[in-house]
Length: 251
Ligand code: ARG
Image (cartoon, rainbow, N blue to C red):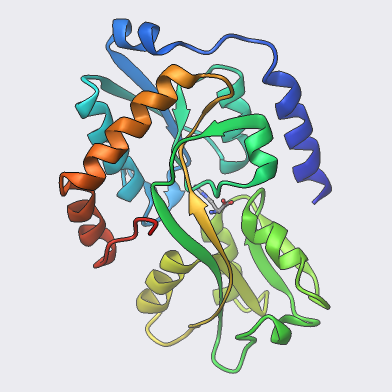
């Protein structure tokens, strides 16, 4: 918690210094620089040298619509918004929940999907918020899962991991009682582990958005209109169906 707060304060400070590339600069260069983590299946995942996932394909579709080539940058999740405010790339798409705290440091696009944070545990393990009392819970660092698990009254030790997949591995290895993560990621884990773990209660809901540097309104406008178009022309629905078997847009 302390670390997350410090990071966001640092972010707010950085936001006031360097200059982001404007929409005109990006358009002129012909290439947009997009950052993601690459370790958050099925949203963004680096498989060998290939970056793929729902968000990767979605962003590539938006860039195509805007007439731009894409240069991807991968960064640990916890560094993504910091790098954005240091102008190391133009926008971030990495399943960031739109929170008031983050919105102080960056500007969010309209949400590109809606989801929530859910508990996953082994059969017999904690399946509700109340059952987390006194239990050891694994979460990825810098996430809304961490924030929300810490709010659960009586929760035991909350262990943070640099990657979400490491937090899942801790659950599988029996080093924690539960893992809290994205509800769709959780469904995939349950499927992959064939009954070794189960999904429990949803702890909170969230809207997920791409982030641009604070004040980069030109780029934000272009991203939003490209997203609106993909939501209405069927391309979003097709992509969502491919990854989730359902439409994950916010309603
Ligand atoms: N939705 C959660 C949040 O807003 C988790 C995002 C994690 N993203 C990732 N690429 N690991 O914090």
